[in-house]
Length: 207
Image 1: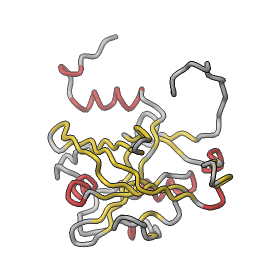
Image 2: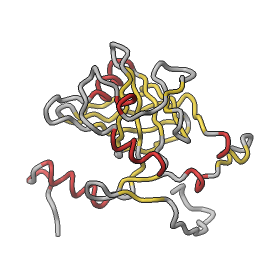
Image 3: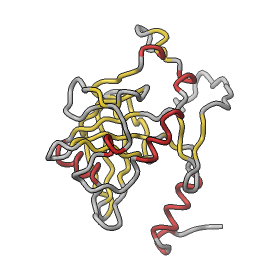
Image 4: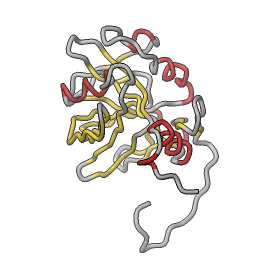
């Protein structure tokens, strides 16, 4: 069956995208508002998009009532943000930060999260996240009314020491991170535990 998205309501297109593009890694984004309030929110339209320079991309959807969400507004205003990754042990706190709090209230405090200072930018990272990326805006494209794609250049990667196997070679104990990803309908997530390995052809592209 073919779905012509130009002829369908946006909400139906959203359901088709999120129920078929799975699993999606979760960017738990921390930003700083103009008044110094720390905003934290999860986004599953996220991935790495290159390494020279190292860049990640975030798809920031609109809030049906307020237009630009706090995360998008803070990034567009300051050009700085941290992408924290989500382990299974923090999924309840991650879910709590998806609540629609007013800009003057911090999801960091509401969810009982601990902040740690970043090295190069003002927004803090989440102290208990196993991996955090300090980012500055490389480019931003408004793709619709209050809908934005932000490409961030990664300035620093913080990895909890006990997950680093060989720092000089960049070897990380990825399975031990226990990261979760978004799946299809509301409330569905995936663990990264059911793995398999397949050798690639030597002439293959980097999938």
